[in-house]
Image 1 (cartoon, rainbow, N blue to C red):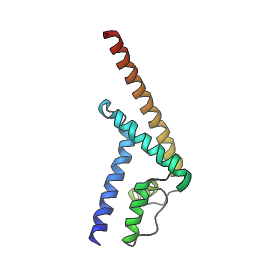
Image 2 (image 1 turned 90 degrees about the vertical axis):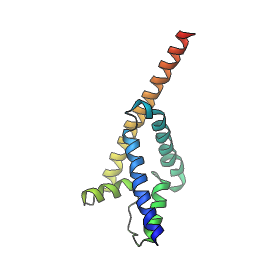
Image 3 (image 1 turned 180 degrees about the horizontal axis):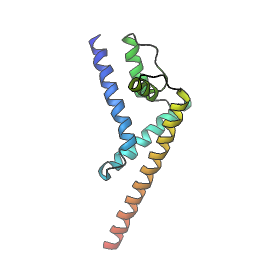
Image 4 (image 1 turned 180 degrees about the vertical axis):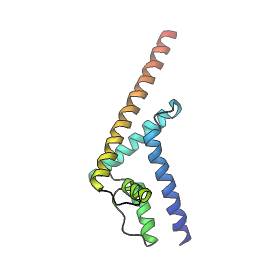
Length: 132
């Protein structure tokens, strides 16, 4: 049973850190490629795996909910973001509102990530072309 407590803590920290990286990883130039990969992985999970498992599907959430179920915590929302928001605020927020805000922020940071990465690739290509 102790392993489930460790896994619960691990998923809470890892998943929360991943979400923060998705939100803010586009800011430092050094993390922009990794951020683009994180955006692509999230989009793949939500939109491609979501075809079979439901829109917004996340394997981390599924694995974390399985661990929490083993700990006797079975009344979990579908959305990990809703879980975090409710846990942080102590409230019970509207799931549709949380999902709408989540997708909106995702679209914004995905667009920023793509824009900044394309801009950097173009600058490198121009620089490399001028030096040749």
